[in-house]
Each structure stands twice: as structure tokens, then as C-alpha cells.
Image (cartoon, rainbow, N blue to C red):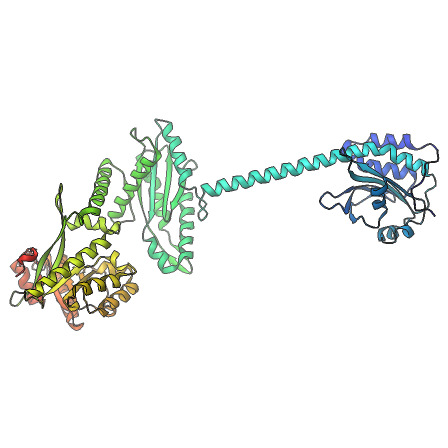
Amino acid sequence: MECAPSERNGGSPLHLPRALRGVTSAPREHYFHSLVRELAQHLGVAYAFVAEVIEENPMRARTIARFGDGKSLPNTEYLLDGTPCHDVIKQGFTLVRDSATTCFPHDTALGTMGVDSYAGIALVGDAGALIGWLSLMDRKPIANEDLVRATLEFFAARTEAELHRRRLQSALHRESLQRRSAEERAARVVRDALHDDLTQLPKRTLFLERLDRALLRGDARFAVLFLDVDRFKVINDSLGHVAGDGLLREIGRRIRTALRANDLAARLGGDEFTIFLDGVDETAAVAIATRIERAIEKPMLLEGHEVVVTSSAGIAFNAPHYRRAEEILRDADTAMYRAKDGGKARFEVFDSGMHDRAVDRLQIEMDLRRAAERGQLHLVYQPVFLIDDRSMTGVEALLRWAHPLRGCVMPSTFIPVAEETALIVPIGDWVLDRVCTQMEEWQSRGRAEMTVNVNLSPVQLRQYDIIERIDTIIRRHAVTPSRLRLEVTESAIVASPEATAYILRQISGLGVQLCIDDFGIGYSSLAQLLRMPFTSLKIDRSLVEDVAKCPAQREMVRAITSLARTLNMQVVAEGVESAEQLEVLQSAGVEYAQGFYLSVPRAPQDIG
């Protein structure tokens, strides 16, 4: 038995030509399998294999091709330490004539296969580093070691070249996969940047690119539809954000299904969607808008609740004056707001008058931001009278804006702008502060018993510090809180009754009176009134207008008055314009009234 490398002692590889023919006749991709088969068969050994060092872990090896007992064997990985292959790494060539299992007791595979002899030659790469080995194993002692060594040496160079080529191909393949993976990741990043995570629709950037390309075509015929979900915030707040997200996903899906193949829908953010309609005239665009509207209105199930939503939309058509995508998108947005102002659940087609009104509205906003500090805002006070003796019991503070160019701007013009932009919050603070200042003056003139009504906007009610704001102003002027009466509209209550009731109870806790304004237009319920700390209500002027001519309205006023008395609330009729109206109101049980018939709004110094 000898466990050391053998010395070459002559001899000729008689079977080498036949083995060489067998290897070279095989296709290149089958070189390794052909090699081990031909070596095993023509040298008469039990096993032949080619193995390579695993680059990621040089202490392990994997076979590339294995042949044994007359057939190809599956490849395997193994640990090098304690194997004949490990000696090949150290010595370049190893030959164990017999008793291989004794020489390598830790190599259990030798015992399993019944191997008695082993021969292996190292395979070296271009840089001189070992990359693998070509090996033979047999169940009997190797008889002709010169033949074995010569054969292995003969095939080593070609095998090294093929193994090196294989490794290069593998490296190129890995590099290709890595590059492809990087490209896919980059594509995903780009897609994620340009598409909405929630709906998978394109975002604003991609939509504007499509619009710009369409505008570059010059005479292209297309339209842009700007869509907003009606009352989305109510659904989001009542059912939760999960339901809100589900709603937006479903709306995005329904919009897609309602479009043609060459149209493009996008989500701009929140509950706003835009749609590019390619090659349409007004008839086709209206038909598609109607189809989208009907698709959205179908009931959907959200978090166990069946929900029906509507949408408002604006349509703008391409025109020669458009130069940038943002311009046509702006006009579609303007038309959408016109649809909302017109009652929601509808769409409007843009016209130039809408743009003029939008510009005018923006100018009002800009001017309003500086109106208070420039001294343009002032208050007038409309008296409230006890009908029986026409005595003045209080006043309502009314805001006026003296614009240097527009003249007197009425609240119906600027209050909606103030509420939309939240300017109503600082303006509301200014109004309350001026009212309390005026109450101080009236108290000094002996009118301490007079009640002053001040309108409170729904936007003010939603401010987290509304209680602190009111309390601070009242304390600053040391007025009697009960002489201050804050008016809240029915619409403000119905939007969020529970939250509003909580805020109103806190305001009432300051000692301030509360009045429900515009009562009778169909929003409030008796249950809501019972939860609110109101001390008075104002009958809406729409009921007062025809109360003398319409028996049904007369009965409505009588019912409201009866309800208010049951709840210990004062009743005030507003908008009284004639003696006939006043007489009917009095017969219906109404105690207080205000309106132009009784008195126009007056300057503070004219309140007697």
C-alpha cells in the first residue's frame, strides 16, 4: 500500500486514441460527460468525474460530470477536507494505488462506493489558481499507473480550458441575471414613481406627459375629464380609512372598465381622478362621462356596509390657445367645481366664462387676505324685535366688506371663499373681538341687557382650539357671556352631529347662548335638537317669504314654534319684509322677528 504520489515509470496509453475519438466526437456542451464516460470505459475503472472548487466557499467542491458503473450519475457537492481531492489541491497530482478508505478514513463516500484506488490531477485557470480536478476511482488497485497518469495529463489542458470557459459563461450568465434584475428593479422604481400604489393608475406626472404629447400634435382632438368623489370625507371618517382606500380602489377599477383602449385614467391624489379622452367630440366625451358616472353610482360593499357614492366631473376640450398640459387640466378642474356648486352628482363642460369667474374668485381671495388689516371690513347690526310691543331685544352682527374697487361686497360673495380657504377662522376671530368691543361700549351706555348674535362658521367649529379662542376673546373684554349668542346653521350640524354636539356643549359651558340658524330647510331631526344645547332657533327666511300666502308654510311655522316651546327655546323669524308676514307669524305663536320691514342693518352708533 502506498499513499503518496507515484513516480511516472514509463508505458504507453494504449486506449488513449479510442478515448480521444469518443470525447472529440461529442458536442462541446457535452464535453465533460463524454470525457468521464470515455475515461471510465477505456481505462476500465469504476468511476470517473470532473469537479470544481465552489468560488463562494473554497472548502467545498461540486462535481460537473460523474460516471460510474456504466451510467451517468447525478452531480453532488462535498466538503474537501479529508478527501483525496484535497491532496490534489496541495500536490497537483495524487495517486493512491490501493486501500484508499484506509488513507482517507473521514471520506465516508469512498467506503459507500467501495473504492480502493484513486487518481486525480489538478485543473488550473488562466491566473494560475486551482479551479478543479479530473479524477478516477476504482474498486481494485490501479494496475497501470503510468497509463492513468498520462491519460489524465493528456486531457487536463483541454479540461482546464473547458472548465474555464464554463466558468466564464457562468459568470456572464450571473452578470446578465444581475443586470436584468437591476433593470427590472429600476423599471419597478420608475413604475412606482409614476403609478399610484392604491389604484395602480398613473400619477399626475405620467398623465401630464400624455397631455403634453397630445398638445404637440397641434390639431389633435381630445378632452380631459377631471373627476372628484362627492362626500368622500364623510365615508372616510365614518367607515374608516381602510374602507376609504377600498372605495378609491374600486372607483379606479370602475373608471378603467368604462374607458376605451386609447384613453388614460390617472389618480392625482386623494379622491381626485383625471381621464384623457383621445379623439373625441363633445357627444362622445359626454357619453363616456355619463358611462363613468353610472359605473361609479352602482352600490359597492365596504367593510360590511353597502355604500352608494356619486361623483362630480368637469370636461375641457382641446383648443388652439392651450400651450401646456396644466392649462387644460386647470380648466377641467374649474368645470368640476362648477358641477359641485350646481348640486354634485353631475358633470359640466368648461367654457371661458368659468375661467373668468375662477380668476375673479382668486382675486377675491387675495384681496380678502388683507381686507381686515387694511380696515376694509366692518360690522353692521340688524335689530331683533319682540313682536308684541316692537321693542328691540337684541341685534345680529353682520359682516360687510368695503372694497376700494368693487364697492360693498356682500357676504354671499366672499364668505364661501373665506370658508373654502379657511380665512374664515381669523376673520371669525376678528368679528367676535369687534362684537365684544362693541358690547363693552353698549354696556357703558346702559344697554347691558341687549343680546348680540354672531354667526359661527362650520369651518370654525372644526378648529381644535375653538373653545380656547372664544373664551380668550370673552375674557379679554370682560363681557357677560350670556349676552353673546352664537348662531350655528342646520347644515353644520348634519355634517357631523356627534362631534358638533360635543363642541356646542363645551361652548355652552362658557355661559354663551346658542342659536340654530336657518331652521326648517330639512336637515335637522328632533333627536338632534334634543342633544344640542340650543336656547333659540331662527326660522329660515324661505319659510317666512310665503307664509302669508301658503297655508302649508303657515302650518310648518306653527309646528316649529310649538316644537321650540316644548324644548324651552325662543323662536325668531328672519327675513320679515311686510306687515302681513309679521301678522301671520304672530298668530302662529312666533315671539321675535327681524327683517327689513322692522329695521335695516344699522351702524353701531345708530343702535339706540
